[in-house]
Image (spheres, rainbow, N blue to C red):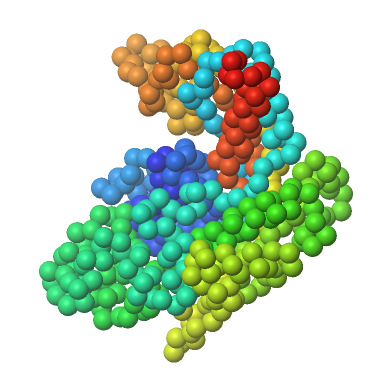
Length: 429
């Protein structure tokens, strides 16, 4: 089925659906995860679920109206992680200065977008990779990789760690306190239940979904990748180096080859630390130093992560295999539209419309045609008077962050403005 969500991440949305149909969230399969800040649409599969059960889920008292689904159908094959070539994004950049309406400024914007299309941007992991809580995910990942089970458990619990003493007693009041936690705190609740059942910190952590534990470890890997990529560019620039590791290219990929000529780093890969990767000679010390400074771990710890097994031969946590990631990304498709303040005002309150908005509009039109009273279907705050806007459409490879593409575009405009100011003199600034 197709899953639409707004204000929720993929894991949060699947947790809601799982509770409403009496299944585990880990049974759902997706090609990738979506950010809670977006209005997103993606494919989801789950084995041996009747279509009627999914349809009835919307009647459950725990159903969240920010979730919608469509195209529920039976297929022979499930969706697998990575079953996508990329993601298509539509963005509206609001609050754009009206000064960009002048021809020179608009030409600079078009030049920046053209440069983004031809040269791409550095393929850092976005901030959302590391979580929005006070305790960042990479700190939990560091504790898991370092086998500091008590620290990892307390970091995940956050404020709920105050209930550890109560949970350890395993009394009826303790279980009531655990059940009183908000529904979104499913990881915290599962950990406390494990402690109430007499498990150790490691045993309680083992109860958490594999996907959640892996995400924490991946946060730590991503942090080191970001640092190594920044150092790679700072030390050696954006041209290829003899020691660089290159992404294999299949035969016939002429367009990709041409793209690599304009963006040499698009064919360069850097490792996410783990037992199955090797490090480029000129960056090995960078990785080792970053692991010590940022995570308090020797780099070798990533190569040991997951080796511990319990009495039944199960791994104590997901193994940090490691992988390789392109150093730069070039959009496969990009287009843009500049809206002056007058044009933005003409568009009304919404500059972009989602699939749900279109359904609302169709329903409103049907009701208007029938003579029924039609209320407002808009769910957005109107733009401020005098603000211009920019609409972007772009397609990126899987796991690339559109926020970084926007940052690249806007930072180029800032550089262009600064250069123009310097060339014109302080009096014209």
